[in-house]
Image 1 (cartoon, rainbow, N blue to C red):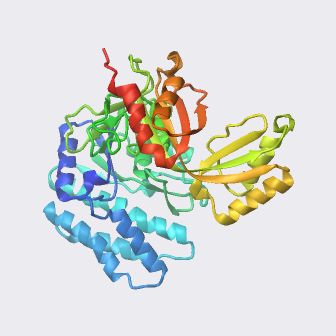
Image 2: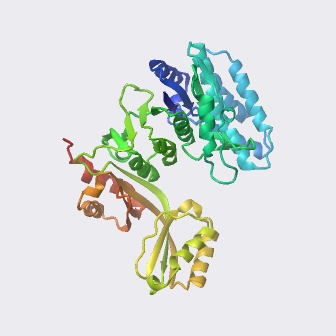
Image 3: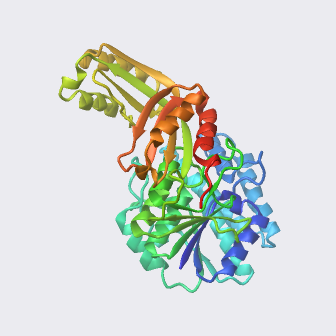
Length: 455
């Protein structure tokens, strides 16, 4: 059995959905199809999810929703007409949206979740209807009736352990193609909650682990994963095979192809993942596996992510003060801030975290507490940093790699604020000012990829 997930660009139009149907027909093992909401049809287009978010906030503000509602309905009508479907399916979709809009608005986050999730849910209904119309036995499956149970609000949404057993019992041994909406599940009390970014990838991964699929296919709009951002590096090398932990490290630091959290279910179940192109399904794609042979190139990929801040704290003889680090991190915990790295010296320590967690009020409180409670001699924030990560299973067997990377960065004239070697020895991180991010990526690519030929 194969679980195939199709992203927003793969289901953005009638033409794209016809390609999806051809892919499903080409292999009878493709029994489970996970779909996103319709994405962009062209560069300046809006995703249906964006239209739905706008609709939700118009409703929350007590404004007239008619125009926003019909902007969503019109997208589905265009798709339905292009697939030669009766517009009855659009009536079903409109009634569903009207029902969601009439829900209780008191919990704004749950209300917005419900409106957002309709994008995937209604697209699954439409695609299932289309499959049936062209002779593919198919059935829409609601995550609630399938048993995709997730934890309660307000914690981050994750599938509960019993969800896997429920899905296995309700989805296996089916003669039909199951069309399953991505992005959301239900609490035990029946409340709809959405996963975080890459939510449809997470759903597909959960389904693949539940039904013990032999392969999880993730269809997008590129032939494969590249070793560096093609928007920054010209014609980067394609990655044929990559391990789970390499992919997770790259996803953490900005690789947008696959959300890092989505790998966990298939990683635990040891199910290989293949990232493929809906527009070129014959291309082999990129395989994500448990282990692979390491070739002559020690680096698999380079990625970067901006939007980091640094809290710098200095105190003489800090290294001899028992519990200083714990107390500092406790202050951040009480401000609901999670950290990424904590490089330190004898008399100073830096804490690196994502900037979106900060507000000016939080910054002032943290500086005040660090100064008064920990008696720090200096404490201040610095902003607008990027994390550059180089990743590769061959790194732990390569000498001088950190020196090569640091030398390449030095050639750009940029200053390195932080270096961190992961304990797994498959990643090396550099903290730099985000204004230097692109030129560092380009220089690192030249150092590790442009001049290397794999035999």
